[in-house]
Amino acid sequence: MPPVEVEISESGDALVAALTFSVPLKIAGQILHKGRSKLYEMAGEGVLDFVKSDGRCEVTVESIRRYQAGLPRNPIKPPTKPNHGLEDLKRLTERRREQRAKRRRGARSATK
Image (cartoon, rainbow, N blue to C red; front, side):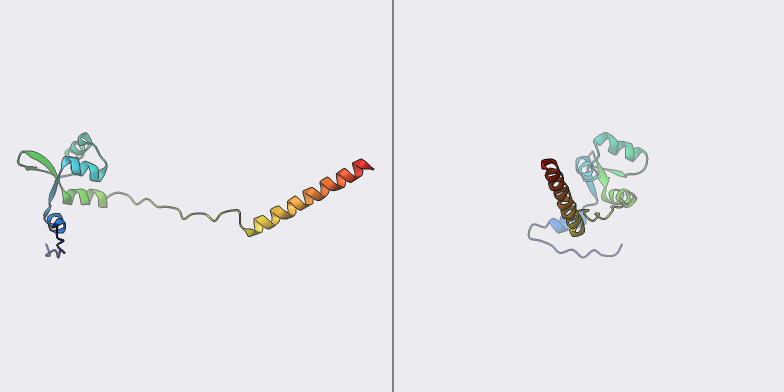
């Protein structure tokens, strides 16, 4: 593996992140939005790799990345243009003028 260049902050978070090769099940579940049982299921199917650390099961970061990289893309449609543009407003104004004119003509003919 090529060496990883890491900028170390005062708290050392970047260094810890660079040296972390596995995470506890709870953290892996939060990352993948899965429950504990589903994680074990995925490990049984060979999707995730588990390692033992002081008697606890942990999920390798590499297997989490591999799983996420294999997920399908979710194409998002671009937003549609609103239908209420300036032209529609002009047409609406004209239509309302015509309706008012018809009502006025109807009222005039009814009074005669």
